[in-house]
Image 1 (cartoon, one colour):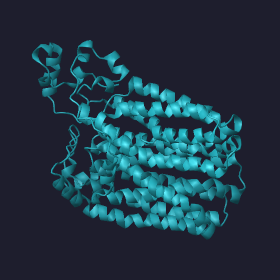
Image 2 (cartoon, one colour):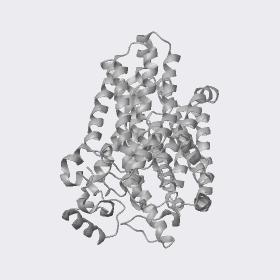
Image 3 (cartoon, one colour):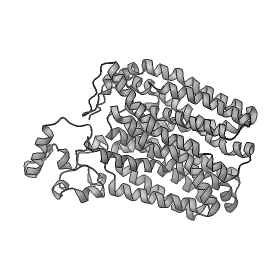
Length: 509
């Protein structure tokens, strides 16, 4: 829950004299005796918020992947072709790329909490509709709504981390926040296969309805507003729409009478804000490198089921279980890579003689954040490239099933490391608009992945799995010189961009 206004300290200059009470004056004196903190949220409160946003981010990739085992059942029950059912998958992916651009800009404007609530209301309603529908038209429309409700949650999660965590410890929080999104793709097929096989495809959507309803209730009751434009470091009382139910119950009545913080002017969400970020020189290379690895990941996951069924003669449930090594690796990497990023930040700061401000947070305009974040990415890129190529040739040679699964596990570790590093760096480069910056990642990676998946089967039929994944591994290797250019010139490009803009984003706000 949000910290008490009296505990955090409040700028009483914004209130008229008759509104200032003695307890507030005492809080002001306590606040003036300390340096402003980056965030007044305590560690337990931060961990609870991270748990909520990780749970919320679980649903977008889960909904995409839990659907796959039900494809044949849906085609049979709705009397349509598999091609038409695949169109619902395409529509879902298109929304995954477009919707975050609207969600990110809106969240930076009106706050994280209202957007989370609106997104989950849409998502819950779509799942109930999907469980009840009996026509293909309803399936297509409701899948679009389902994607619209869940697709922005990952961008929102990264923005909340930027609100709460100063740069020197941001890595571990990004890793924890992305634990849900990183593990969901591997759990989805298993859950979907069990539900579709043992109950019916409708229970896939009832399951999502129940789980998302629980998440929505927790968000309404417990999730505080964290957007720094609205609440600063958490010490400024948000407007009523942005306050959690728990904050009304736990705070003294006197604090609930304080005037709302002055909000920025409302406007229509602008998806072009994300596109502008995409074309910044200091951002573009990171986005493209991240998108290439996301395409490799998507193609590996999309081809896993048909390849293993054909080569090893596995049934649907057995194939579903083969997704688990990758998911377990993603979960492990989410935590380990966060610690690596924080270590790299401290090592880089020491190397350049930069003093880390653990209380107020660092001014990244004066710090080579590109070198800090990319310090260890070369290990992930090189190992991922080698294992992707090896994975293809183990399938080509029809080795024991353990060989490709072990290589999948290693790919899961390294690809997740690359994702988390790139996602964190993108937010570091745009601290004034973290949700919009994170949404730009979705636009680029979903577009590139859609292209890769669309030609995947043609390449597999033409080249076989060995040369197909050699091609994907080579594309991964191409990202190394791209990231090296970012390492060398990124800070100079960032400085030029900020000078042209005429403003320097303040990490402390």
